[in-house]
Length: 253
Ligand code: BV8
Ligand code: ZN
Image 1 (tube, rainbow, N blue to C red):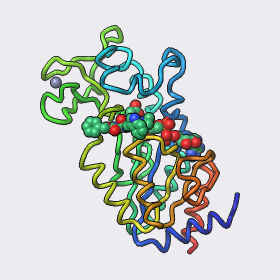
Image 2: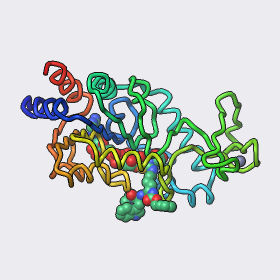
Image 3: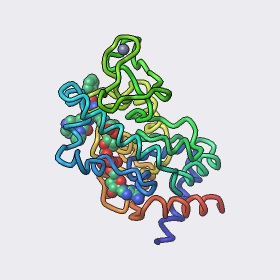
């Protein structure tokens, strides 16, 4: 591992009065949560994400989409934070002004101890009414329910309509206040860590692009090239390996 790059990242984070850590599915990969595209295996292998994760797909085949999310919810329930999540939580404890913004719909950052995480694309463990019948979002707690797998999606207790996961599908708007807060943070921070994202999905990709446009230090942690690797300082390593090293170096400064 290139120790200079690790030291450079640690120093830039230490000198930055405000830091944003922006994460994608790659930060959860080492926890065994497949990235969005990898989750299309078996029964769902013949679909593209944009064909399943949309309101149109849900209207056309609510059972197929609900069952795909139930499959992914199981994977998330079985997952535990990995060293990258734990290092990010430790960094937030060490740095006076650090915000975590994630595209991920799992809660592994919170399980690792990160606080006030901004979820741009929602939370797969939460369920809401497809009609938002009591206001946006109409969250429904189904944790105590026994759901008949032959009769999914379950019905909203208020309006009888379909229930759905509380995630942002393609062609759906991101939660306005969350996106605004994330964009504002990307304009205000003095350094950014971008971890485990391809940078394909918008408007989330605008968060790192804003930081790059401002010329502040941006570090791209990804074993493969992303949309940002050319313009950022690229650390071509798995997050679970390099993040603990960056935080150790930071703690020694
Ligand atoms: C909207 C929740 C408008 C659901 C998700 C053409 C050009 C540009 C944009 C568009 C376009 N056509 C349409 C659009 C807009 C569209 C979009 O961006 N499409 C893309 C495909 C081109 N965006 C939208 O539709 C958004 N909404 O625009 O609405 C609007 C406005 C007002 C009113 C009405 C409508 C909504 C986008 C949100 C979609 N929902 N998630 C769910 O999860 O089921 S996005 C989903 O895919 C994930 O959340 C993630 O953000 C994204 C990508 O998923 P992955 O590929 O899994 O993850 P990622 O890209 O982060 O890649 C993984 C990376 O990790 C890789 O680079 C890999 O190398 C790396 N990695 C692997 N292992 C490791 C690692 N890194 C570090 N360590 C490791 N160990
Ligand atoms: Zn309802």
